[in-house]
Image (cartoon, rainbow, N blue to C red; front, side, top):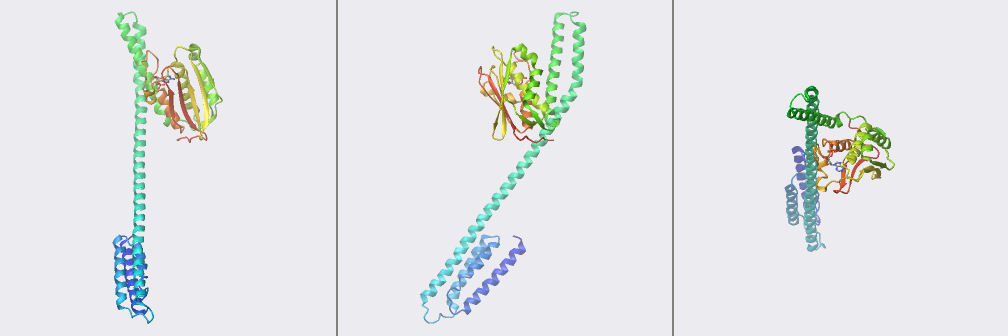
Amino acid sequence: MKQNGAKQFILYSILVTIGIFIFDLLTPLGIAGGVPYAAVVLISFYLPKYSHTVIAGIVGSILTILGFFLSPPAPPGIKLWIVLVNRSLALFVIWSGVIFVTKYKQAIEQRRKAEDAFKQANKDLKKYTDELKRSNSELEQFAYVASHDLQEPLRMVSSFTQLLSKRYKDKLDTDANEFISYAVEGANRMQRLINDLLSYSRINTKGRPFEETDCGEILGHVRANLHVAIEKSGALITNDHLPIVMGDASQLMRLFQNLVDNAIKFSDKEAPRIHVSAEAKDNEWVFSVRDNGIGIDPQYHERIFLIFQRLHGKEEYPGTGIGLAICKRIVERHGGKTWVESEPQKGSAFYFTIPIRGGKSDE
Ligand code: ADP
């Protein structure tokens, strides 16, 4: 409460107290003269300190007792004990008021403190979220600039090493041939990594607005795009009915394609058997891409979704280690989450969710 307001309430309290005391002194009955002091105690609720209430209680009590001695004697017929009981009752009411007001003040203060703490926590959370957003977008910008600007010099390295290989292959000694092929291979691999990094950094910044997208159709395109790998591996891809969702069609295609491509690539001795399904659960579609491949040890289930994390050498299974990180980011942009259930040699099931009524495009 503001200083002036508090002063005003103290003044009111003093005036009311004097008024009650005068009334008590002028009333011959003098029976319940002390009870109105409880009103002063109640007024002290509007004063900031607990001590104001206690002081109101003490002053009220002293005046109640003084009133007993100073007020005119009780009319004949009224016994002394009745006067005493009534005065005690007044003290009881005053101190009940003190307890009530202080407890109430305490509860309000606790609530205010909790609200302040909540507001502060919200403020902190907003600050951290803003910082996180800023550092994320800086990182995105950095990845974009780095991968974009690296492309040009890398293209030069790649084309000149290829030219070197074409012109001088077999004209130099065998060591030189080997070194040139390493350089060509290194440059090609670096180009793939940079392209992947570039597409990873573009998921949020260059995504298209969401529209109704038929996942069944998307899977059809994925089958067509991967037909060489499917034929080569003898993969059989089956699916349940897949729904129409709100999303970025080209990103959803990339998502399905990465998962199906991995399911073909990480197959065991048997030909890949892949099943794609979707199930509606709690306002979201839970999609799964299940395979009968090499499986993944549970200790790596989170790591494989991080950028450039691979569990095998590139000689064993080709790849850059960014496919699942891209999948995760696409799903997050659509308002869903990604996870895997798998054990070594028992195949894998990759899951992701998409809100049924569609997440909003972040643009
Ligand atoms: P990449 O396929 O280029 O290696 P990903 O990010 O797509 O990169 O996958 C990361 C790692 O997760 C892979 O190297 C592989 O070890 C594991 N993985 C992904 N999909 C499967 C799968 N279907 N079966 C077994 N392991 C998988």
